[in-house]
Amino acid sequence: MSDRPPPLKPVQLAYHVPDPAAAAEQAARDHGWGPFFVLEHIPLDWARHRGRPAVFDHSSAYGQGGDVMIELISQHGDAPSALRDMYAANEFGIHHVATFVPDLRAAAAAYVAAGYELALEARTTTGVEFTMVDMRARLGHMVELYEPAQGLADFYAFVRKASLGWEGDEPVRHLRL
Image (cartoon, rainbow, N blue to C red; front, side):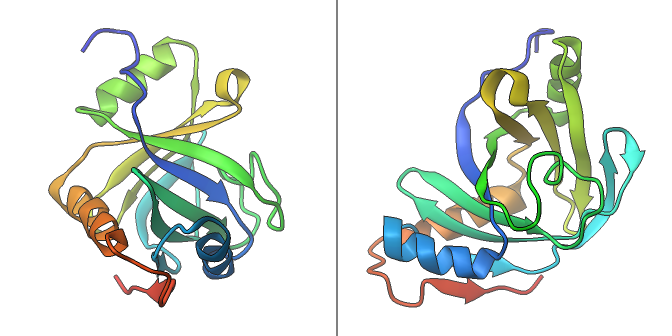
């Protein structure tokens, strides 16, 4: 990999919402996205917000919108975070675009070398590491980076497969980790 950040090839659009399950119902009705799979209080091994240890208690609903995954994300509480950098708890808006990278650390370092700040670095208890790069000055939103490890690739495939032939029944489904 060169020192230049990798190409941005969106695999997910993420919207900040006050309530992921309610927003998923609305998105299914209004846009035909879905079905959505809700994960509450996604457990993390660790998180850093702008280089400092942080608590990032969040929930998300994941569904399919055509060729791209849609994430509806909300943070519990007002701790400093990449979400609170952009939105108050009751606000709606595009928060980040996610992209797969072959090497997370190298990609994050390339973004830093290009003058961007890492707003969030974290790892889920299932081992998925992710980084959010603050690209608001150029794109108006964050960019989320992660490697397409098998578990994550399987989850993307699961969400996509559920959308095939889906006709709007049971638009919100709750998952447990």
